[in-house]
Length: 306
Ligand code: NAP
Image (cartoon, rainbow, N blue to C red):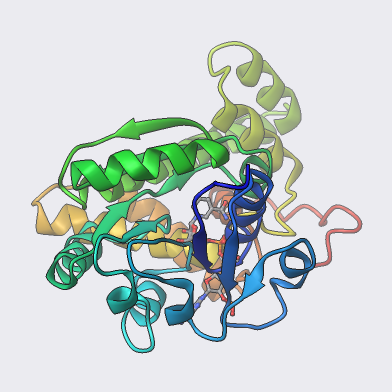
């Protein structure tokens, strides 16, 4: 494994850290950077090198992965004191964060202007899936760079979907997927509320539909979470869910695509923030339907910290 390609990795949050671990375990020499220092300590103890700034993660012709909260964070690490210039000539930035298609297109142009390439590679799967190397990756950008990224992304994923040369395309697909998940959570919540108000335990409905009509991971996993009301600790924090639904609606507006359900789930998430649920998982958007139906909130399960 000694000749595995060296990788720079920026952003060791809930998703970034387990992905970085899988790259390290696959034998890639790793240089990591995180805004809050110390989050990479275990990786460093296992052989990774800690960079002093994002720029230090890049080298001529090298590869840098980023996994950051949002568009602003991504632009910041690429920009001032960033690695953009360091990657040229011939380097690749593999951008895993969920950001807007426009940000990806703009960054791809900036990279091309410097002589490096930008590949959008947003992922599906929560931190547990990241730790297990079972993410699904959407991939788009310049074809040669994409090909080089594919080989590395196999270490962190169970499958990749290529969406072509437009660097924004993978982000559009990711936003479509997150909209579908949020809409499914709202639908489950309304159905479970209907059941509960008519004497059926939500857990019974989650089991019934998860085993029959909707036997797929989103209904099974989020169905259980919603039925149990177990929203902390967050795997995907509610403010990030709000960020994603805002990106969905911005993309919908710019492409003249009415999305009434997306407006509804965005408002559910906004209500969650207004009610002080920033530390909850985004599946807490499901509380909206219950509360509107006059159901008092379930007591939080013991040991969940809120
Ligand atoms: P997270 O745990 O909140 O981690 C966010 C990371 O971004 C941290 O490393 C944080 O650094 C860094 N960061 C934030 N603002 C920054 C800034 N201005 N400059 C530099 N670094 C900054 O979030 P996450 O759950 O890992 O999500 C990361 C991305 O993956 C998001 O785009 C999210 O939408 C996407 N995603 C998440 C999931 C999930 O289930 N969690 C699944 C698929 C995709 P600090 O440590 O200093 O705060």
